[in-house]
Image (tube, rainbow, N blue to C red; front, top):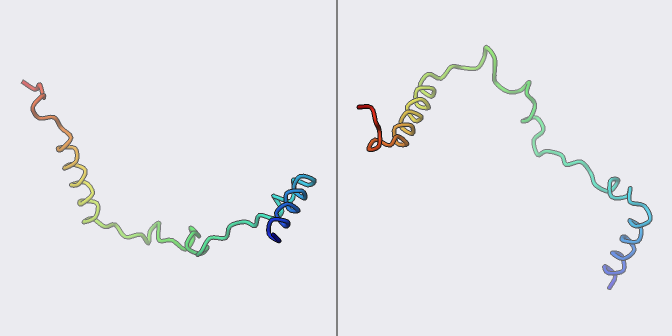
Length: 77
């Protein structure tokens, strides 16, 4: 019963002062705030060009395009 009474009191307090909602909510802190820092990311001149990875992506895209092609209804003749 105590929780029910406290909820009723909280509801009444919020009716009187709706600004309490904004005050009671704390900003969400990310787990690892350093991971989101752009200065700590690899990039620019230091970023390595991975030729094998780029070739793999291009081959995958080509295969997907070939799979999507409707070979039977093509009118190239």
